[in-house]
Length: 292
Image (cartoon, rainbow, N blue to C red; front, top):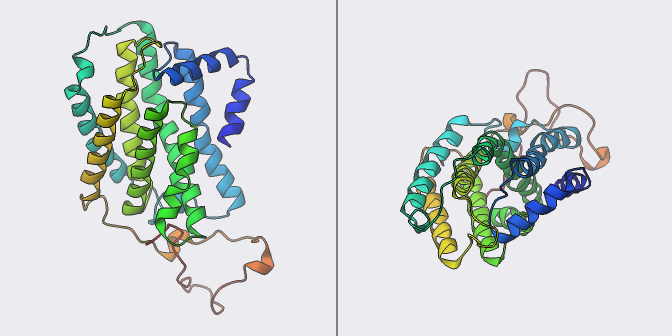
């Protein structure tokens, strides 16, 4: 789905901007043009409603079960994760050498436009990626392979491949994807990974927008990679040991019950359990979220 959307974008009148964007990413920096940035972020953000629509049509399941074992999106968990991440990542950036190097802070219109687009589009972009890779893909794999590690490790190479960085940048992305998958399993939902993803992109992109880095001077180095990976692992550990985030990891039959309608193929999916009379609760169903 992502490949189709990006492919359509590359064939559009903005293909030159898309190619320039890939060159910026390959150099480890962000594009200076708000049009380039807005185009790419929008292409990723539309994957969010597309994924919901596809699952609703093909899976005939309640959409809430895609987000958590509670059968709904738990907003307090996402906001708590965002607060953790913004505080930790912001402090980490403040303590890093990037603010002590000889750099020029850009306060022009382009930087402000990129920042505004980032604040608006990143939540949708982050939610789309988490829904696809830690939601749909993880639950599909978890329905075949029981151990939860498979559900979150197997989609990681595809997630990493969609990021155009050098090998150090890809290592950083792989660690983040693994931690996001672990947090999805530990918290029984996507709210914490989404909050973590939003905060990470807000700080990283917002900082880069005002530093005005030259494409010939990559930001991704071994020290910055070690620094970023360490910060990701620290935030993951802090949120894992916060019992207000990891208190619920099992679901109920009501949360994952499929919508009424014809199942496909009918012969392979007969009704489970004895016949029910109207008004009686449904029989216990297996949780669609991968469990250990």
